Image (cartoon, rainbow, N blue to C red; front, side):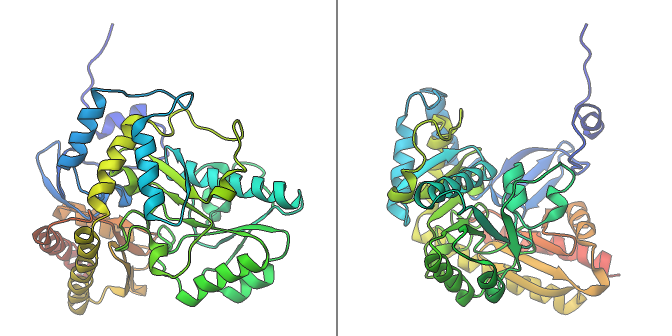
Length: 404
């Protein structure tokens, strides 16, 4: 006998593992930068599925690619290759420093592959003692046990037993601390070229160049985690392209599929050869559906109009947020690059970022947090200007209520 349950937030609590605590409302439809819930209430989406929906919801190019590929070939596994995967890999290598691509399903998997490759490369070339991985406090690299250990937020990695070893952390933008820790035992340094989850923290350009120089000095690989910063988010296809430094390995996901799950690790031919057949793999990685959608996203995003448009939209957001702050004095800082922006709350509102998120949702705007005191904005890269204006007007009403 079957029973019919009303699909509502209460049912979520009955059937889902309680590691998430989602909003009470349930979105059911999206178009562009607007979303509607079960009750028909409309929201302006400044969250973008956490920097994923780079072309908004139901973009025609993505719907077309998904429909066409869905009528051709869904899945093969990597016992065989497929045309969409090869085409996408070619476009990624043509547009970046990379010469080889490994496809996965998520950012965490792309980072897992990057870290395993770095360790295998070091073992093959220098022996077992070269295994130290250095990353940065407040960094975030995914939720597998390896990647969450490399991430610099202990709250995410503690409580699961012994952690993978030879992983150490220093403060972001502290080149002297990194230099003190590095040695010939360092196999890789992993960093975000702009920390996202850790509070939307930009690097000093000299710091990034210094990290590259230290990696060269100690024969260590530089891994850029561009899961959140990549695919147009900062106004170039990848953030490294604005920093004057190229990594040895780069991870990408989130916006890569525009909402369809896909991740990738990019690297050079020389480094890639250390992942020989059988050393690493993925059942779904390189799935034809995912790669067909990602190729369509690539063709839209990797254009001058979109990338320059990101920079224009960045200024619109920053100017409008500054005007809100001039009235209500709730932000200590408004920072970030492109459409990965953060507004840090003043001491008066410290720890209350989620209150602003909830109040914004009540007013019909979806935003994010980046830690307890930073409100994060990661909208569609092509969000219409009128949606920015309307969404921030709603956000201002939420701020006004909380500022009292």
